[in-house]
Image 1 (cartoon, rainbow, N blue to C red):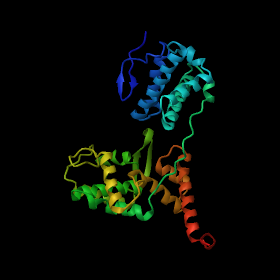
Image 2: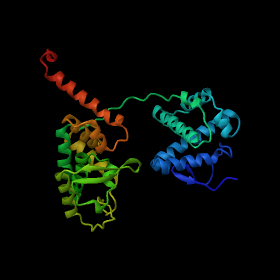
Image 3: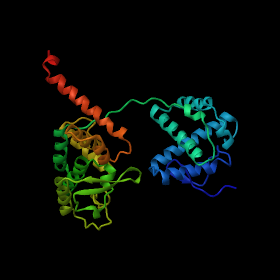
Image 4: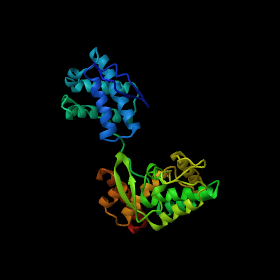
Length: 325
């Protein structure tokens, strides 16, 4: 008899186990979702997306095998079965990015079953998802980044909101924070010292140095903020005193793009890219930048070397006499 467990379905929770999973596989699905949430500390959005992908996989198997998939069926799947599933998902209209995520989700599910000692399926090691185009970060120039931060307050409806916007963008460019990390800070974090403790992705903490100009921008905002903020209140608030929404920051950056004639790639997250790229250009080493950004893998940080190399080639092409010839 199944225990009463919560299963992820879309963006909500339900007590109903996947109907396409046999009685012995359904609890494993629930255990896997719990593992993603608590052990791996993935975001609720990611857990929901992975859950949908594996539910779709189990639904495919039900039709493909002629019955609900149990542990024995999962153990016995061949590479041809996995490829048939991929072919079906392509027929369903999944784009390459969604298909790559679905492959990652199914791999994660089988990896969990193996590590839990439930079953092992070696065929899945031959499963290959679509190759995605290699993206390179698109930072602003040093001049562009400084203009964005300096001019952010000029378009605000009220002076204190302008000071708030300058403070938020100063944290993104001056400390390399993600928007969610900056807006997740509470009032107790300020006034800043020489370093700031940040809770990043996966619940991982890191310390980032704080430039005096960044600390001063935050203090200027707090000095003019019309709301009395307790230590447990959000540091950055909107016009109604609630925690500032990332959407407001994005809309503000959109207005700045128009005012400063910046490209569409000039987003709030581009300021984080700019932080890393400008440090690298100034001689910063990759390991240090990795720690400052909170990247789990050095591979993520190495993308910025490609940006810097491209910049050097542009300078070379424009300045070298033989290149101009």
